[in-house]
Image 1: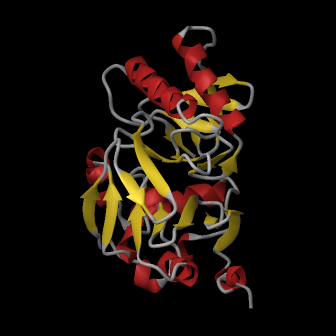
Image 2: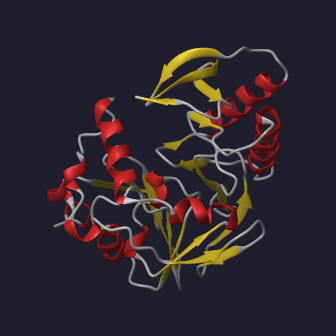
Length: 277
């Protein structure tokens, strides 16, 4: 039996090696997580919504000690944190991650099921994960580095999607783990009196991260793996909104209804409150 087949029976995880020692985990269309293996340590990036045993899956691939880090505190990335004793996260998102409940997770799964983005239903959350238990939080900030032995991942803060959103940069392999800071859909969700000011903060951070990494070859996002050209597109969309080159229009996008700006195949919203489908 291949490693990727061991969890096939629960119809939750699909796992694919995207680079030597780097695996993309698709949580049934709900969210993405990643396993990164170095010579001495491993790193788990995000924990998904917490439907099945991510920890059990991780430990099939990692025989070395490992850490867990969250790109941000939203339910679909922090929902599985109860499986781990310690989780790294930016200070500004600790309260958000700590506030994730079983009901939040069930509601998110229901919304995703309704728009046919997943076949998973809330009742598929396994019994041991039907809990609001939380780990110990360990803070990370820009400049921190996860040294895994033969592989290093540098933390870069990218506030906007949430105030504590981070990216992780693997310069040697030319990979950026973007979380939801650069993706097909950029929701500027963090609370702010000046929404356009927050958009500008996100644009400057995301642009600096992408342009400062040389010839990036791969972006490992919060919901899919994508080419750097897609990251450039969403950043350009933000720039055009800031320069008043495109206007917001009311649209139904993914599981949301709100005012979005669209550039090519990327959308941005700065609405603080969106209707959920």
